[in-house]
Length: 493
Image (tube, rainbow, N blue to C red; front, side, top):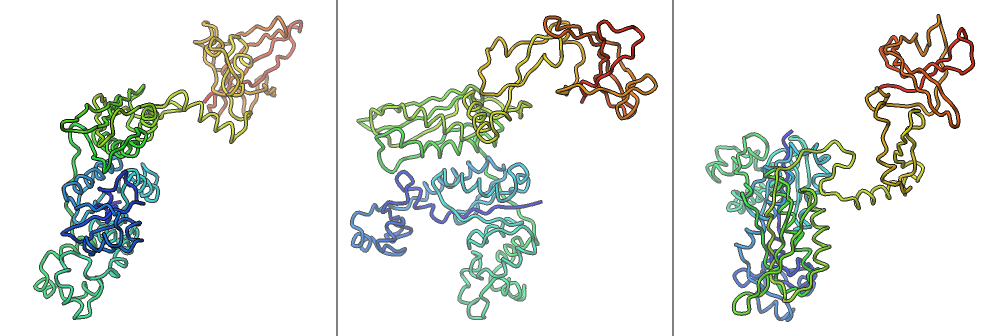
């Protein structure tokens, strides 16, 4: 299934320049001495797009006015694309601050389209941006829906109905002819498609027809995918000086998001990262403050890295204000495949495991979360017991094993809590069907100090080829011709 996410970043110029990526500041971005975008506080003061600098200062004398920088916008858009590589390697940059993401092969991995879109939005928020997200079976269709905030569609038929209602001036090749479309009463794309194609091509050019055909799934789409660099190095310039290291965490999280996408694109895991807190340059230049994180296990998960950075930044005392951040990953290794253990989360610690067990105990109760407590005893029902996971167990007891002469013998996967007495038919034990002994006997004789037991254990096979662990009880003092008593004690997997 081919599915695309279109991500349009309409507020990119503002958020690139906002100090600490905050939205409650009076920031105004100018282009050619006119307002391009403004923060919510500035808009509340009456600042509107298109207003001149003098009008802004009259309405809001304390406004922070900055000039638009296409270079920094391109860097920011590239940073977003790098972070999105953690969801798919197929990310392309489109016109008008839009990214196109082919996520058809990633849906099952991330739990469906809704879960994946939620994760993309979370990554975008961590980077300090907001955007309009859409989903469609075609790349150009998702681009048009994102530009119009028209939501998500999953089928070509639904996409066609949704696109037909969009304004006719939305496709870029149609905008120079907006007056002509209005003059002939063509106000939406559906009406545009009903126009004669030869005449539409002569009037507007082939580019408009190609875009419509690609959006409706009638023509192939080709893109140049964004490639991650071979070496990771990311940096950001802060809008204002920061005197507290903990305030750098939001910027560090933005860099970690890019690192996560870069690691996933190269199938690598990081063992050590270095966050550089850059200070003043020039005649009063100071060397950057390095915050190094060494990991016990290689990881590529951003949550674990951010958690560690938060702990480390809380302990850093700055000798000078911070004006920029940079992140390097000097120690890498190939990404390890998922393990078969119960707790396979890379980079996890004993603390994480204990916290998870405490959460399970709180939800399920202490009697439902147990740990194994092996005993060095020959008797199967005594060789292991289950105790609450919160009970403290000495390490020597935890590492206890069966006697060496028993470890090589077959043991069933499931031991019954209480053996089941078996019926006898034609001098053979019966459990659903007559049981045939499939092994030589193993005698277990122990417990003379409290309750002596003498048993001969066998692996028995039923008519359906199911294997059972049964034993014949030997009663001390009984006559030799007394009928033996048979019990079922375990089941093999």
